[in-house]
Amino acid sequence: MASNSGGAGHRVVLFPFPYQGHLNPMLRLAAALHARGLAITVVHAEHHAPDPADHPADYRFVPLPADVPAGLLSSEDVARLLTELDAILAVPFGDRLAALLAEQDAGGVCCVIADVQWYSALAAARKLGVPTLGLMTSSAASFRTFMAYPTLIDKGYLPVQEGHKDDPVDELPPFRVRDLQCIDKSILAEFASLLERIVAEARRSCGLILNTFDAIEAADVDKIRQDLSIPVFTIGPLNKLSPSVRSSLPQDRGCLNWLDTQEPGSVLYVSFGSFVPIDADEFTELVWGLANSKSPFIWVVRRGLVRGFESGELPDGLEEEIRDRGRIVHWAPQEEVLAHPAICAFVTHNGWNSTVEAISGGVPMICRPLVGDQLGTARYVCNAWRVGVEVEVETRLEWGKLQLAIDKLMADNDEGKEVRERMKYLTNMAGNGVSEGGSSHTSFVNLVEFILSFTC
Ligand code: UDX
Image 1 (spheres, rainbow, N blue to C red):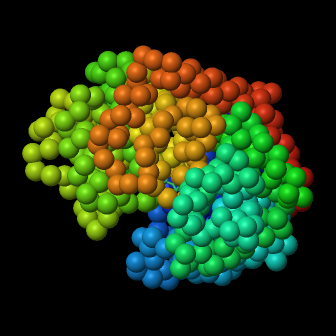
Image 2: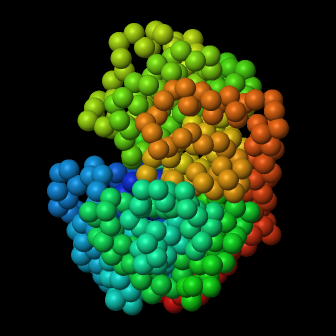
């Protein structure tokens, strides 16, 4: 994206949510705004902190010291995690923002862009008189689910009733009940109230930014626009719009050299994102399935991937077993892997970033969603956009089921070909969208003008 100094004197304060799937898009947005001449301050939590060395020297990084209880960060109770983190960090955020506003030489803070999950921080900024924009790092469909949650409960879709999982959700096509962001009945009320606060604060903001694009979610974005009376900017895929951003986690770049030695279109890439764990028996099933399958592969086994098994150590003898056919890495340069011609398919949990990165790289998906928005995203991938095939999610992962999905996708039959053709089409549409005059490019230009219209 062309650089432009039109933003001189305008400082944007960004506040990412401290998980990889949220940090990456926020830092990409920062890079895109910086390329347009805006000054960048990143206020961040102390855990999963971005490394300033990975970013332009004129970015300002402001850590927020806070007392986060041990264990909260890895809690699988998402309602508790989000609510407590929000409460813990909102006050230090407000204090730090007030201090930034008081600084003479900081350059005028013209707005705050925070992850929509930081609803209290957005409220704190608003109370200080600073214009706010929310960034939704997941899909438009996911935000629609947030908005519809009270209706979904009122109409009896949630909590999910046995025997009704395949019922269509008329208010949110193409979702079936099983694709909703279902949550354990015991914390449904707490989760619903959290979503209500997130949506309410997004409504009070000056604008909403979505990492999506017209070719995949135009209808969902239209519905959001009709419902919120604020500007909605759809600027995705951010990984294509923005200059590349270095990961703060150490990446195993050696796997790229190994990919260079593989046949084009032959290697499976397997990753379940940065956050949600899988069970130990599923891990073992995958280990031996991959070891015994014929396909070459790269598999990301990050720390904490396996529930109750922090180190992520591999069974004895496995490395030898797979030496010639596969690479197991702690963290991959994912976008570069997905862009490599040797990759044929992506076994994914359908985190939103992984999904849009797969589309950007033109890699068909084998979908094994784990929780939350991932279930709905897999539904779009397999049934609306038709750029992937689903592995049954109701039961524990079995290698045989995964192998069936891989065979279905790679087969030289109509279904396999259609998926690969559709993916080529969407990849082109993603590229067109972020090119000069494309819908995401235009929306981004509008966003920059919107930010410049705020007085500092
Ligand atoms: C979380 C939620 O799980 C997801 O449902 C939601 O949509 C976003 O927040 P996460 O599980 O981390 O996200 O998945 P994802 O959204 O795919 O983000 C992972 C990010 O880490 C991607 O940008 C990916 O490129 C990066 N990554 C992942 C790497 O750089 N290397 C890896 O080895 C694995």
